[in-house]
Length: 87
Image 1 (cartoon, rainbow, N blue to C red):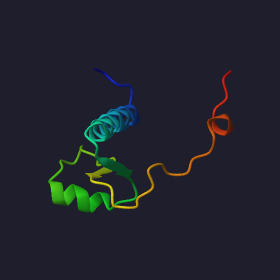
Image 2 (image 1 turned 90 degrees about the horizontal axis):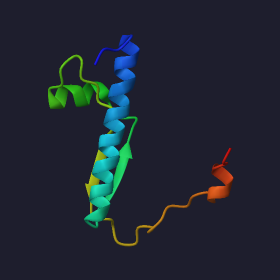
Image 3 (image 1 turned 30 degrees about the vertical axis):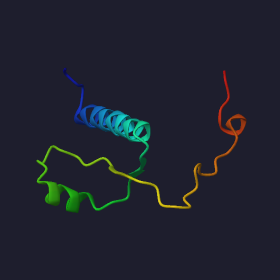
């Protein structure tokens, strides 16, 4: 597929990676595992450690494993009506 700009290519890569991570996290939950997406990592370190090519961009890290004993079953969240409005 042709994209209008390098920014459009990067944006599509970020969207695709995000959907892939979401699918991985849903699959982990279906298997009874906990997962967490992490940003704010050392992108250059990840690129080096995994031998990524220049055009490959690390978007996020996803941890998957068993939840620690005593971990909250649900993190506190605002009620839906505080964060969603139907137009």
